[in-house]
Length: 317
Image 1 (tube, rainbow, N blue to C red):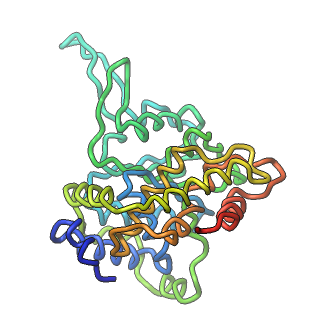
Image 2 (tube, rainbow, N blue to C red; image 1 turned 90 degrees about the vertical axis):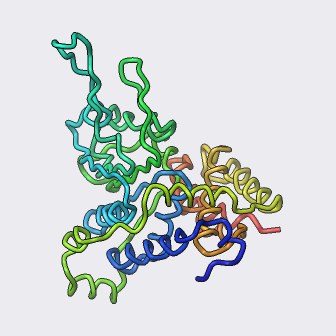
């Protein structure tokens, strides 16, 4: 979609084209999932983090690798396992006998893009090692705070919690993710192209970076300038209020969830070439922003079903 004049003024020269090309490149690697790919870029441009949850073999890690290869940012991958320690993620202080002092050895979290692969296969203590990093863009080790690179973007994958060897993410950890995506099975045509095509790993290895850190930061600044009307703020507030009294919901959405929804809607509108947010932008994102933040009663069904019901229960004035 061509950018409107107001949106073109918001984005520096070349960034709009780079964003469009980057989405097209990821779509060429992750077939048949254009909406999910767009939402992944929404998470990046909203200064948030992305959780990809689905069954093994459906392309979670492929999407994460395709994003990392396309972004042109410093990248690290951590395979979360049951024996992974927090120090394996954030780093550790090691005593240097010659200098007679402790030296901090940085862990893989000191990257612009961190892929936390199968994050729910690590125990809760290790999962919590990312809490400060994701919220504050810093880590504290032995009382000393270390700033993380800018931009800092976590892409985490997880398997459904009913699979063996998984630990459910605590609510505080889930809240750090702006969006949660599920890829699902590909369509028939996409699956045929995938089976007949080249190996995705080889394709990603040959992928050229189409963005860099300065362009990502410029796009994030442009997102902040996307207009949100008072009426749309009222619509988001009505969704928050409904979530707190909806049947089957034990804990509804917090104000922080509302801020996340508005940030994501701004990025979604900008990617579609608009300088203002529409209710349709909020509706397109609500499930992915809200569902994993809801705490449901044990017999209330899935959080995704509850989020859908909440959205349908609130009219647009």
